[in-house]
Length: 254
Ligand SMILES: *[C@@H]1O[C@H](CO)[C@@H](O)[C@H](O)[C@H]1NC(C)=O
Image (cartoon, rainbow, N blue to C red; front, side):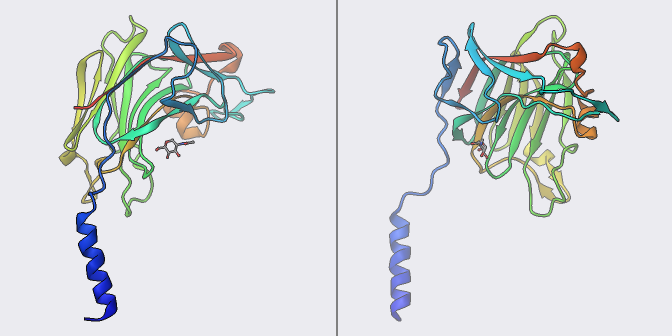
């Protein structure tokens, strides 16, 4: 046996004794905002550091951009930079519940998502123009996709009591077989792995640990985004600063 083969086989034998790489463990967690500082499990990741922890909530602000904002052809020439947060940890499979108050102003989007470095994503998006519905979506990019599949797995569903209540809890319950979105404890949408075939390839977020990401953003440009959000934001007639409030974030390991 050559030296190289010997070395290789001893490497293989050693490898067999190493512990297998483990999926990121899910650690149960319940974040509330009773103190006036940001819990260590969340970090701001936007350029804008406009947020505030007060009155039992994380207030994520979206502020009018400086100078004049001109609207032309359905888009604004300036887009505001809203507050966005990542969790400091990632996990593979679990149930996340976000308790949120989203602003009801057209062109503003509040997002509570799960996102992996590899691009896998599970979304809840609340459009300020449509407070009685929530949008859900997933992404699991595959090498042969020609771009992000924005419209393939998206859905718009009713928020029960959407127009009478302002605080709602939204859950994304994710395991290897399916994702269940629920609102205020009611299951609203289930997407099974076998329903995510597209061009012969399954597009189900799996194997990549995801982070929790929360944010408020200005959907005033480009045109397609503004049209989707029923924007652009009409800054002349809305408060100079808008906010989405996160009351709690819970992670259950199912
Ligand atoms: C936020 O989390 C995503 C998903 O893990 C990661 O790709 C991204 O780099 C993070 N952003 C920052 C600024 O850390």
